Amino acid sequence: MNSPDSTLVEVPDFIAVTIGLLVFFLGAFLTRKIDILKNYNIPEPVAGGIAAALITWAAFSFFSIEISFDLSTRDELLVIFFTTIGLNARLSDLIAGGRLLLILLAITIMFIIFQNCVGLAGAILFDLPKPVSILLGSASLIGGHGTAIAWAPVVETTTGFAAAGEIGIAAATLGLVCAALVGGPIAKFLIDRHDLQAGTTDGPIVGLAYETDGKRAGTVNHISIMHSFLAINVAIVFGYMLNLLFEDIGLKLPLFVPCLLVAIAMSNTLPVLFPRLPWPARTRALAIISDYSLSVFLAMSLMSMQLWTLAGLGGPLLFVLFLQVAGTALFIITLFYRAMGSNYTSAVLSAGFAGFTLGATPTAIANMSSVTKRYGPAPLAFIILPMVSAFFVDLANALIIRVFVAL
Image (tube, rainbow, N blue to C red; front, side, top):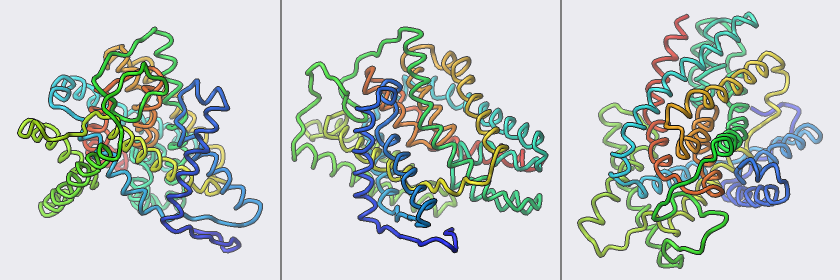
């Protein structure tokens, strides 16, 4: 909502995407020039997106200009990205990762409870109604802006606490920033401390390594790019149809979930049925498209943050968010990393876990991608984490939130 004393500038969709590309290159420039960003695996769209958000904040603060972006294409890029993840998935990986997937799901449910307990402690400490704990916890952090906006009216109606909506949005915004900044350093700490080494894989998953040994997973040309886009588009078409079927039976899911499932099914059947069919899984062409869609999505998400909305919410929120970030880092280093196997893949997953438990699944993937570009591949991490963070967690989070609201 714009301030009555400010001038609203609405940026249309096409220009917003173009600015998103510029923001990505700004982030790439910053990570090249500022060693701490590169050394601690801060993704390029994160560095650029936060810098752009600070610029829009300055425009609002000094010139009373409020910049609002049309983000329609951003949401389509998210669907494309998760479809590429599905196309890279193999049943052998899913079977191999079945045990890890179950462990990840169990530990995530445990963490949701932990996160809301931290929020509850903050609510009690600052004499806030106890149901506000979910807006200081998993509704805003693991759930993100959408879940916070959905539950804030419930908290307000239950408690009469008028600032519920503002706290939820502010916590989700700060959480997204923290998620993008802490995942890479956590992974670096674990990799360096335990002298971890990446395994080998037969092709890239998301993006290409910063430094390569000269090996190629297929040639990138206009034909390979077109093959990749055709497979992506066909998967999205059938994913959209599957989503309509889900809606008919009362199951409401984000569009990217059925697209992910269809892409997994396609990638594990069509190459077997048609061995001569050019298939883009784990090719450099598909990796580039995956990296592009994720990078622009994340750049647009972060550059559109209205940081001035955080002003005036003050110490209590910042203190509780500090506890959440510190608690997340401690949880990952002492428990999560060990539970997931104490190896390189678990270190990469640690960066992703910080990303989605404080922010969102795309932030998690960007964190992991930044780590693997520097240290080496971890394909299983990119398969099992989206399965949990993009599908199962929403169901578990909703149930646990209801318990804490009932307080």
